[in-house]
Length: 354
Ligand code: CUA
Image 1 (cartoon, rainbow, N blue to C red):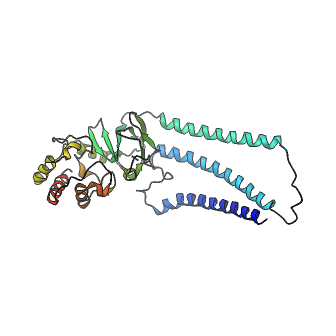
Image 2 (image 1 turned 90 degrees about the vertical axis):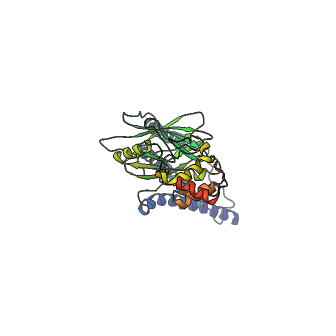
Image 3 (image 1 turned 180 degrees about the vertical axis):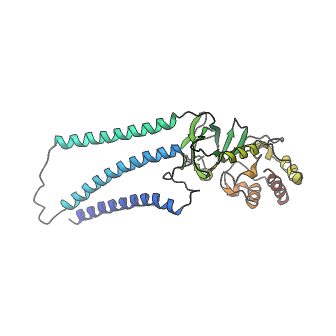
């Protein structure tokens, strides 16, 4: 008897824990939007772009159906535990033995089939809807290449190469302007995920995946690599900067310029070009044409360094140039053993790359 009571307690406790966890998840989804501001939130429950909106609607339907099933099953289980609990004097009697019931068996076969069918149809429609979208004329096209551990971003039509911060124009009612992305990988599998804009899409070596986003509100939308890709996977962050069409055009024009040749940092420039920096980085308009690392032509137009691992401040830039392994252990940029003076000179040069 003790043992059975103990078992019932265990089941009840597990159920209560589950309900508690479920409540936490639901409450978290609702409280966070109240506390958080509009920017910097990575919640699939606050979509601001069409694919994310459609995905949210499907998720809520699936959650509702699964939630209803959970409450029915858990309710029946709790009812059975209480109603048929062990009572004094039960030892000798046996409960009525039931051998099969066509109605009940039919019900628990047909109902789940119908539920699964509904889920399949709704999900396929959402997937087809998102995947079959063709780029309208005027859509922005960008290619994103995943690297360990940063994002190369190219706009082939605009002649722009940048990294880690994807700029796109906001789409407005009378001027729809989605951005279509081609996703590739230079090394291992990565996954592009900006929760408020679209679902995850993998970047796979020797393959090209497609996705699109159509944000409607200006702002900075954070995201991250969603496929484990090595030690610095967690610091492979991405920012999508959504701008008004005019601001986006201005940004694009600035990015199309070659690197500035500010005379104030000639020494730093010489130090930079006499070190191996040039083997890995491109600075357009100079002899630095390396392809392994991010394009530095307009480094200072980016808010972050090292794929979002640090803000692009003078101190962080210095720290990064001196020893990247301190900020991102394992990253491909080595400690170049530069003297303090050289670090300062290189940083002074990099800061002219506006
Ligand atoms: Cu790239 Cu994880």
